[in-house]
Length: 327
Ligand code: SF4
Ligand code: MG
Image (cartoon, rainbow, N blue to C red; front, side, top):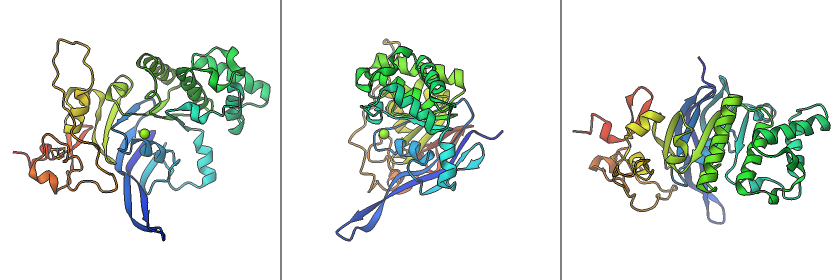
């Protein structure tokens, strides 16, 4: 069976230019060899601190940012080499929901107009009347009253605006949605409502999600698979169960220790990450996490860890699991 989405060794580097001549002096390796695959209807959660490359990964998959190298296959078709025109046709199938929908909603247009425009741009619906009916349908699908079509973006709350952002994404019948920190700016109770909406729409429409968040507790209930990113690399990739039952990478363990446990009588030891994420233009040698790792060994400072398969589908990049270095 072909995966709906298959990403292999994706790299997105940004040149660093310096001086008045803007000479290239190196690269920020924002995404540095990320691989994963998703079947239709599955969700991959991508987590990591800001600057780890998760948003760039999401945007590179959709070619909103051009990847430097690697392969992105959608239904078996390599999309990194498609022409602009071919890519425009495909855009309908792969949509994005941003963190702040307000920034992407024109304040001078009613939400009815904004959604109708999304439909007409992609040639959906034969006339305005038909599209206006579709817009009302869309609003209901995302849990908003269809009488609100004539309101402007500022008349909605943050959660409602995110519903509008989701309505705009599903308007064109996509199969893949990249949700880039789509609930991060919302209060916890509103977060839960929007996560439920994402889950309901997935069931109803068979959507496949790449769900980006900086917090494991956000992706926990929605993800089938989870990738943990650090400085451009996926340091651990596993199914939801594997990751939560057996977090292997010290970075994952630290993120995990910050997730609240439902039963407060269970004492969890909090692993505090020391320091900030290092500058991505000058990442540490060896294992890029070694400057903050509580389990760091000598070898970690010089040798970059290999990907080790702990169990089928559970991959970790850490010397602790490499028979060559662990004792
Ligand atoms: Fe820590 Fe070493 Fe594993 Fe990196 S390779 S995560 S520094 S133990
Ligand atoms: Mg981001």
